[in-house]
Length: 270
Ligand code: IPD
Image (cartoon, rainbow, N blue to C red):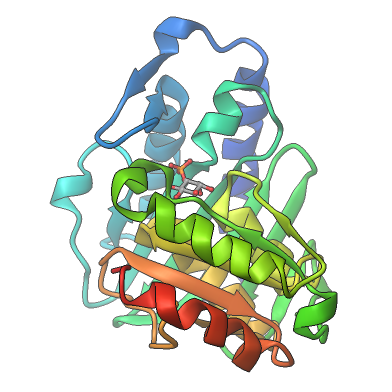
């Protein structure tokens, strides 16, 4: 990705963020519909922002492919060149409630390898971004993961709300086990932003038993570039081929202790 292309991506994502901000306070009930799974919603703005991003990215990277959360998700393909993995509004439930904790997440694969990522929180005007081998940044300033140990850690986690029948009990068991060993627990409702919080050292570790690729792809690049680790909850490499996966991430110091607690839960997750 050239410097010009990257700047064009930032400007497109910021423009899409303005749509979220503008829509946030005037969302009507009729703008919201349900998707598969429990408590899984989509709004007219998820669709609008995705269309805006797809159209804009096609202009910057002609011929690229997409893996995107909303409409046409079943037609997603991984291309030979650039593939953009898009969540137009990560934290849709927060957006519906005007809770100000939602983000645009765009990860980019080049020839199948994770190469670039950006997560933009329009409410705070924070753009987390990174390029393979070049570090991770927040609004242009370098960021890095924390060096805290388990005992001092604040762990942010996701509940996999759409799969609660299958994964809810295990999620809570792991959370309780972690809570007894760390400083405290958080749950924010946007996995993409949770991963950025770990990448920037605001939070010390993260786990969720099932996420979609658009929830974690950009965050994965950011954590790796910020000096952290990110794997499945069983410590395996995350898939970059569009599959759903469990996700665990953190700073280097607590890795062993954190994964030891998750190990038991790992076998229940895909
Ligand atoms: C959701 C959020 C949430 C996580 C869910 C995700 P969405 O994304 O990231 O924090 O717990 O698993 O699906 O549906 O709001 O784009």
